Structures are given as structure tokens and as C-alpha cells.
Image 1: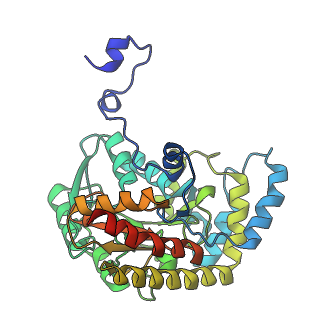
Image 2 (image 1 turned 90 degrees about the horizontal axis):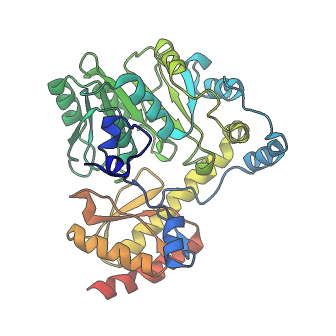
Length: 374
């Protein structure tokens, strides 16, 4: 007898949902602060952009707040047109959503029937898995190879299982590694028939030149996901978008929440997009922070993994139990960080690019934490 039956609940969940565990994929820093009874000294664990959004975006959102009584435009007309001009595509090639998370939810609702095979990487961004499981999809998780998602194994498994979707992020979370544009283009060319590639490019604004393939909206089996949460510094605004072939994008109209976008956030995103100088400055500051995190790690006997994102994954050189103990020792000293959750990636901890003061605190705390567990 399940819990609902024992309580004689007056609702009837889908059998699939009723059987799922109640799991929270991310325990946020706020929840941990409530448990601690005090705030963290440094918040460098959630891959947020601590350099913040463009001042133009802040001003635009402050002004727009006066009219928050209005619903947002259900077509997202102005932001879609601004994005289309920025990327050199048509507005019909773009759909908006509440972050990439929300767009992935729409996508799985559109393409995954119960029992459908879906391929991803073991240890990659977990929210996608939650969406697939909620639709009853059969997840096939391929291991990383040399700390990168294995694009050849992904396409081979998709072919073997007649997969509906492949999820692949470039650059990658949680390792920060990446494939070149030419390698990703070859992966697209090798996709098996009937399989759609979900290419998560959340971190592409930090990546080195030659990482991101040119956008080609004539390719009918690729959806490219972008966000204002990372380099644009607007994680709390929840503004994401997806680029694809026009007919494919039009299918989102059947499932998306047409009033799901925050009006003030959309206005801020338009202003942020127009300030490419701020974006470039943020990318420079992030690169500097990555270099400092790497230097701190090396000085304490940890090995940084080369990153194309706004975080650095540090190889602790031992097993996952050691990395978890180190993470907990750092948390106990008031610094919020995270770690990958699947072996062999879980031998690492992960540090987001922070302000100089944040990294001063990390530099102070890391040797203390290491000494406490050795």
C-alpha cells in the first residue's frame, strides 16, 4: 500500500508520478543557510554570475516594475525580434521559456512518450532527467570519457536504442569541458534518423572561439538552448530561449505556457542583450576568476580541470568520499560550493567564478578545510 492509499487521499496522481520519489535535485544555498542559522560568507557554488547584470538591464527592470500589473506579451514579440536580429535568424526560429529548465520540460512533453528511449550523460545536468522520467521515458546514461561528455557514445547509444532525444551540453556542466565546433557539427551530421539533439549552450558566452557551431536553422533535428542566467547575470529572472528550424519551433505553441514569461524580466533581457560591452567585460572578469581559482587549487595540491564556463572543477585526486568530506569542511567554514554527484566525476569539487573578496575567503578556507580532513 502506498502512502496515498494509506491516507485515503482525495486525489489521484498518475501512476507514474505516484511511483516516483520526492527528490529535490538541488539543495539551494538558502536552504543550507536556514539549516546553518546564518548566511554564507561566500556564495560560489551555483554557477551564478556574481558580476551581475548590465546596469542598463537593472534600470530597465526597475522602470518596468511600475507596470508589473500588466501581463507580459504572450508572443514575447520584442525579445524574440531582438534575439533574432542578434543571431541573424527569424523570430519564428525562436521560442522563449522560463529558463532552459522550463524549455526542456516543454520539449520532453512534446517528444517523449512512455517507454521512449532518451540518451544523456551520466552525471550531466540532472533537471533534464527529471523531465524525462516524469514523462515515462527510458533514460540511457553514457559515462563521461576523459572528463568530457562522450559524443560518440551518445550517438551510438541513440542509434542502438532508437532514441527520441539526445541531451548534450557544450560547454559542459559539471566539468566545464567542451568540444570544438567542428566536432559538434560532425555529431549533428551523425545523428540517427528520428533523433532530435538538444544542444544546451548555457555557457557558450564564456567559451573560447571555435567552440560554438554557426547557427543553421535549416537543420531540422537540432534544438539549441540559450539563457540569460549565466554570462548575462540574470539567473533569478528565468529567461531562456531555444533556436531551431521554424516548423519545429512552432510545435512549442501546442504546449508552452503563453503567460509563463515574467514581463519585467523580458524587458531586462532586451536591455541586457543590447549591452554587449558589459557581456564582454563579464567574460573577461570570469576568465580572471577562473585563473585565480586554479592558482589557489594548485597551491593546495588540487588539480583544476581546464574550463570554458564560469566555474572551475577541481580534481581532489582521491575518491568521492574524500571530495564530499572536503566540500562539507568548506561549507562548514561558510563557503557555499558544490560537487558532481556521480563517479568518477564525484572525485571533484566545483567552484564558481566569484568576486575578488569571495575568492579571498576561499583562499583562506581551503587549506583549513584540507587540514581538517587529512
